[in-house]
Length: 328
Image (cartoon, rainbow, N blue to C red):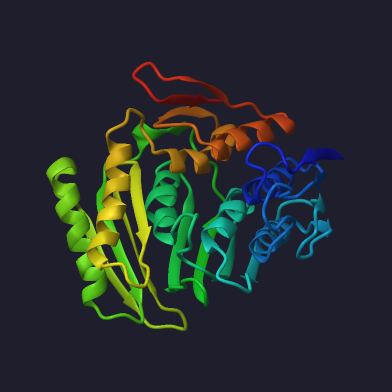
């Protein structure tokens, strides 16, 4: 059994999610101790439990310690299999983070999952980042995956719903040059007037286009549901920015915030932005290849360390033109 210190480096939920995914992919039983030990509320939270359940459903895993507040977890995987699942986070916890754990495992045998929770949450990728950045990248490498955003879910109510369907896929070695150039923005809202996402989009466009050129695809996505909120995700190439609306904050300020995040990454050397790099490292270890990123975050370093615990190595070095280079 592989013993993993859950307090290492970033020491949060990403370590747990990635550890169970790697256990499923390698077939190695893993015990995680000190789960989220350094967090204000240590131990497992509902969003982490949802991610573990999603991965366990792909491989018939036996899981011990899967309870709110648990500081230890034992994940004993079985063979990866095709499965149809429904996972409810039970809070506005991030759907994107559940999919982040599930997807690399589901690619092996295919499967489908419906996740209920938050589609846009603070401190996590928006569901549009997953679709327009991560999945666009992986599809260009041979991933056969579709995503259907059925409902938007915002803090605190959540109740967003997303369904993903994957066919068995063997990816080509990771190479950013495979991904077609693209740019655009998705400005979304639930239970708000249509002018709110429209103003977000207009403000982002005004900030971006003098630098990036005209945006390609632009979408205003207005929904109804149990939760109220807004978000915008914009991208140019393999770099993106996003922002969430907040009560009392003008829609124009939200749009500019997303654009400024993108422009800050756009100005740096590297093929992909730092947040996409976080999500690509597992696929790089699995399929080989290389890419350069604007920076190496603590999340990325945590995943690199964790991969090493499973005997998988991703090299990191300064990129010749600036930024960070990763290869496997």
